[in-house]
Amino acid sequence: MAAKVFESTGKFGLALAVAGGVVNSALYNVDAGHRAVILDRFPGVQDIVVGEGTHFLIPWIQKPIIFECRSRPRHVPVITGSKDLQNVNITLRILFPPVASQLPHIFTSIGEDYDERVLPSIMTEILKSVVARFDAGELITYLLAGQSVLLQQPQ
Image: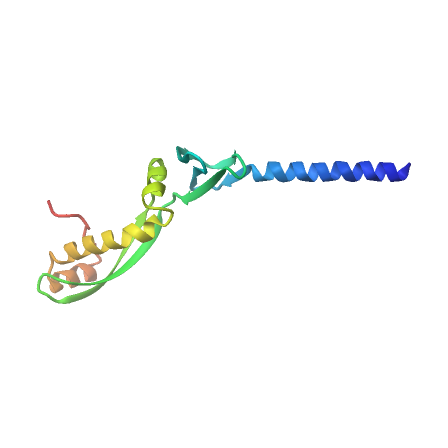
């Protein structure tokens, strides 16, 4: 009698563990300040951007790709020339968040490491064009006075 009770309890426990594993693989969390794009194995990347919270997906068919959407800093050191052809060693710090609605397009065209692929070249070119408008004396004056030079492209 006790053996039957233990056997049925063991089968029930095993079934409950298997069911819990399936349910657990169908859930994923998106933390605060993050967004997710769903990669479906058959049709590809879905155009929907998923916000924070716990969400369902089809196990083994769909996979969430999580992006951080908070502003985070990026530093790029550059050696460039000023207007009077002096070498200037300067570091640019930029705070950038991705546009959350464009995450599916960013993922399909550039990838998860979009910031490593795109930002260094853009930041370097813009910084070189801005530093080239000033001579070394003007740059030192701006830096000693604590003013920042606006990094805008000339019109």
